[in-house]
Each structure stands twice: as C-alpha cells, then as structure tokens.
Length: 453
Image 1: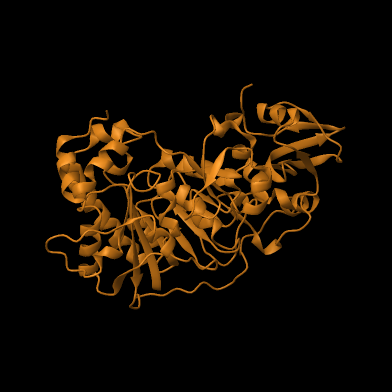
Image 2: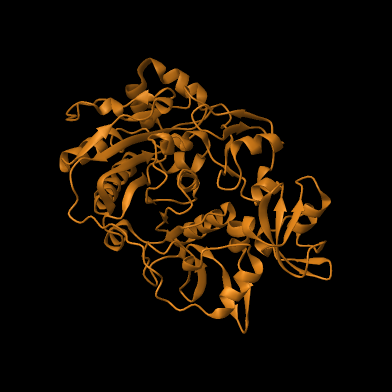
C-alpha cells in the first residue's frame, strides 16, 4: 500500500469526506497511460485507420486514447510525432474552453510540452504560439518535443515570467498557466513528489503561483482568457489562489468550463472566507472518479481593458536572407511562403512575419531551416519534421517495414527518387530526412534520437 504523508491524508479527508477511502484505494492502482493524436500531422480519422495500439477513446479529448502498449516511445509513430504520450488528467485543461484557431496563445510554464502540443493543434498553422520554460534543461526537452511534433510558428522562450511580461506586453488572447505546484496529484506515479511534500512547500508554491498569475495579466489582451492549472489538491494552491487573484484584479471573472470537462470533474470547493460566489466553476480531476492523475483547473476571463493593447500588423521581415537559402528551398520544396523566410540568431528560419521576436529573445523561433555553410544549406531535423509534407522528394515507408527500422537505427536505405535532400515518411507523416545519391539514401536522422535493435 502506498504510504502517503500523515498530514496530507488528514487534509485530504477534510476535502473529500466520505470519498477519501475511494481516493486512498485508487493510489494503489496502476497509473493510467494515454496519448493524443498530433492533428497537425494526421487527422484523427486517418490515424484510426492505421492505429496499431490497443486503445480506448477518451470521451473529453478528440483524438485522445487510453492505451496498453509497452515501449511506445520506440514506435515509428512516436518518432514521427504522430502521437504525444500524456497523462489523461493533464489533457483536461486545454479542453476547458473553446479555443479560436486564430488566437495568439502563450503556454507560460510549458515543459515538457504536453499542453503546448494540444494548444498548438487547436490553432491555425498561421497563428503563433509562444511556449515558455524557465529552466534551461527542461527548455531543451520542450524544444525536442516541439521539433518532433513538427509545429510551425511556435516560439520557445526560456525566461522568468516577469521578463516574459515585459517582452510580450498585451500580446496574447489565451494564456495557459500550468503552474509549478506541490504535485499532490502525482503521488500515485511519482514517489519523489511524496518525499518532497510538506505544508511549507504548499505555501511556497502558492506564493509563487500568485506571482506568476499576476505577471500573466501584463501579457493578456483585453477580453482574453487565462487557464490556470495545477496537478495538486491543496486549497491554498487552487481555490484560494483563484479567489485571492479575483480580489486583487476586479477586471477578471471566473467562468464555467466546457460541458465535456464538467462531466468528468468535481466542483471547486468553497472555503471559509471565500469571496467568489461561483468558486464551484473551478474543476477538480480526481483519480478515484476519472481515469488519470490529479488535476485542478480554472478559467479566468478578462472583462476590462488592459493598459496597452498591441495589435500585430503584417510587415515584411527587414533582415536580408542569403540567396543560397532560397535556392535550397526552391530545390527542396514544392511551395512555400517567401515572406516567412528570415534569419533568427544567425540561422535561416521559417516563421510568420507579423509577430515580432527580437534577436536573442527566444530559445528557438519558428522552423529552423538549417545551417548556412559555404555555398550550401545543411538542413535541420526540424525542417524535415515541419515542412516534410511540402517536399519534392519523398521516401514513403510503412511502420512495419524493415526500411523504417534501418532508418531509425541510422543506416543507409534504398531510394528511387532523384538526387538531393528528401524527407522520409512513415505512413504518410514525416519522420526525418535523408540525402539521396545514386539510389541510396544517406541517413540524416539525429544520432541522439536513433533506436537500437
């Protein structure tokens, strides 16, 4: 039986009442595994035709599935960014409101990238999403996941939320604040979270969450939304944080979530001294009620006007791009938007021209086309993953073929297309690149991502 902190159990008994024993029993069950389809690469309908995993649909996430399959991270579909493995409770916050696909969105505390990937799938390819993570090592993990998923027009930043607020004032229609927390909702799958738990840490987290939410205000447009989420159960980090925020900022209101999320969650909990009379609009995802780990979420809507409301205007990139970049793109792609090609931090990138990202601001900006060498371009892995569907030369493989095993292992494979850079596809989705010469495809899959037999 899982040993939980004594003080934590006392607090949970107070919150759950008669439900506590059901919750305690759920702690000894196996964690639930799930993934989402990356609809930026493949439709849910097409995925279901090629799906090889034993799955059951998640009723509140279109393209979300519970699965039972070992080492799914080694499968070609994972390498191709067709799926993103994510705990099902953590899928819920991005489903709390209907997202306008034309919005500009910020994921404020984004690593490893689960909520970013779902938000990105809900936007048009032309819309910009900024994904921020303060810890550099986690930011690199976030970058790797965004590259694997093949996202366009995504900016990755690595800064604290105060600096972020000063960098992108009033730029976003929606902000996801998946705040660092005491992690009570992860106790079933993470013993470290149990070991590190304390009342003192709960209070420290609540202080940090309040600061992050206050910084989010400067980033939000008039009539914008904040989705506040944690993976913990404490009142201090959840309803109390929301209530205190609303008292500090009377131009915000707490609004209901979508019916599909309401159906799989419990009401927010009123507490002594609560000023918000609709605190039940907050939602609690419990492991003894719905398959998944613990999660809290609340939707905050800005009803007043912000001090500065910056509306982006479409402008051409002022930076001159070397002709070799366009020669490379003309030879490699069937089509592309020339106005989207620019230079960021010394490298050619493919990025929407209307959203300004100053030099040195971002960890990564848009799609990294590659590195400019003497008279040629050495393409980056992200270029294949994001723009592979536009390639002139394609090597079409299936997930069960020997060729895809060889390719993911770093070996040379046969090819029938003409010489030049080609994208390698698995069941119609880009998995990486190769250089074709004389009927042979020299593997360009990054060494750090390759598999073992």
